[in-house]
Length: 285
Image (cartoon, rainbow, N blue to C red; front, side, top):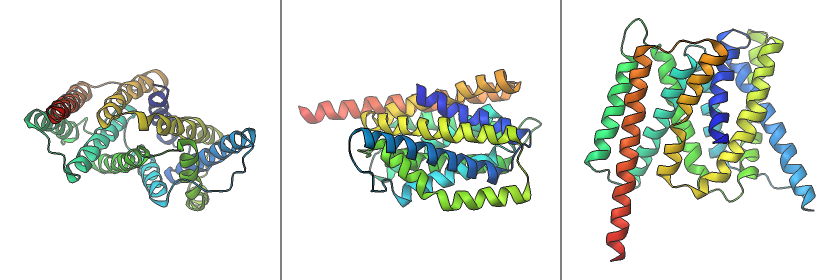
């Protein structure tokens, strides 16, 4: 649950900084990645020193770093246009769609109840972004959906991690060259305020760096269904944060869509878990 609060905090912090125009999306992304890399490197160094080991190997992977960078940049740009709760809802709906698509590509065949659940979720998402006075911008929606697909890829790679802290630190550090470019480009185009920098640093150092390390640590012990169910709590936490810290309003359209998306995804995940459990029991007989 600590990791889920961290994920929701990222949405609130991004909206606080970008919604108030305290930073550019590029600058916010760069500072977030830089601060996350520095904190994770420091934690890893202290841990290895206490264990009397020399830290020389750069863990993680370029694929993991690319997924992390894609998620972080699309996430920041999208939050210039989206509210906290709406962004978090689209993000984590896209995460589950991405993970389902990967499972299907690997040979998993969802049953009728699973397709029904995802059909409900997709219809609710279409309703959320359909043209209207309170519909979120399509560009922001598309960017956040892209961020969700990148995060799905990052989570799937993390399920095989044997050194979660080292892998998370390595992924962040591989992003450092581009992060520096983003910071410079962001400052040239839009000077950051001190408040915006604080939000970005807290997001990178605490909510992203430490939060992702915790998430990578618990992922190997979770089933795909379990990991997906846990992440369904994030939009609700983010929505509460948006109301408490930013003063955002929860519209009827958002609440209705949230119920459809989260309920549909939950139905699909539960049906899938039961189907696999039945198949395992049948195989053992």
